[in-house]
Length: 493
Ligand code: UN1
Image 1 (cartoon, rainbow, N blue to C red):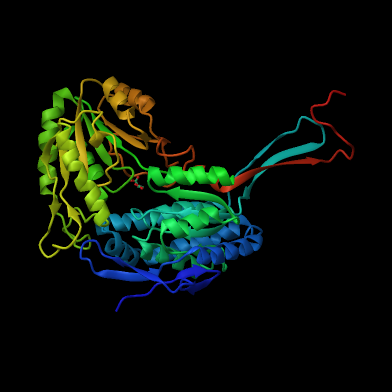
Image 2: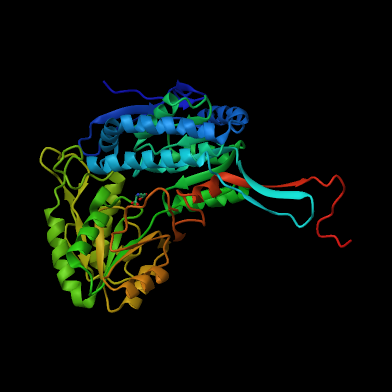
């Protein structure tokens, strides 16, 4: 029997008003993992009203008290980590070890933001006038609309929800329809932790109806979106028309640079993990490897050897290295880049085809794929493929590597392998990305540092760290005049 899940609106678990539903399948086995409300604008309307209503009381609860609810939610996530990780693997495919990491990232963010309840620092500063006090404090924005992807279905919602809540906002949240159970689990944890009704509202469904309605709703004061650059741009344009602030995270075309002096086995470990972890479906995935000439052939041989040994399968099996991709359109998109690579003159060194692991013939698997002889301008070196495909590019020098690294429309993550501290720091300075790793791959960002990127990756905002507070609060500058007389700033006597 298919498990039926509901929306969470105003503290109640509800079906879509239309009664319509959609099902999610396990991408490895094609078994149905649950049925969810196929909501519409009317459900968003209910959710936004509940959030606006709850705003009044929630913003007045002292931030440390709001933080305490988050601490309790963090403890519930710890208690349920294994169950939530298994649910996560079953609905979007990543291997269990990584699913546990996804839940762990949500735990980390929940605790981190719970602590912010007792910080949330503003500034105090001298006034230019006597008997006058000046300070700045953070104020919530109001009702915020959060739209999240399927590839980190616990971590990414927590990056948005936890800072939004601790700073006193209320939330209308639309998760991806390809990983709805994880958001159900996250919201159930917040409910159990004692979050008051209406503070968080979960509306399942499609971006074109639910997401759109969230953006349009007059009560929603701010939108935070993680997903593709194409959709992000449309949201930015619409939010500009509506005069709403919007925070965007929109993908990457990240590169690992391996210089001649690098520890090659270490670098190969980093490439395999960054290119094929999460089946390459991370915005931080290494879809390019820039290799200095002297070690290029060695790196290519070793990488292909490792890629061929990766075991594809059901992420719930301990022996599986690489799970399925999320759905048929993803499979199609990834496969479409193979002839593109060929026609542009790259060499397919391994992979390049759909895979059919024994017993999982119907699953959406794609072989770990390495292209060699790739030129920086080729489409496979420019466009986000979002699958287990990486492109080896030969470079002659560090300067060339930096130029090639920066020569794409995205700027999320980059990495350099070298044993030379001078070259490492030159790279840190020159790589134009929001995240830079030295002697580690392109993935593995931690929650207490800013996360996000330059150029086509973002729009100047960052998630995580204290940077997230900037997104979800407005600064309020407060002047207290205790002189008992009219004092005029900036006016000569
Ligand atoms: C993403 O790829 O969408 O740094 C997020 C990482 C993870 C988060 C990735 N902590 O790869």
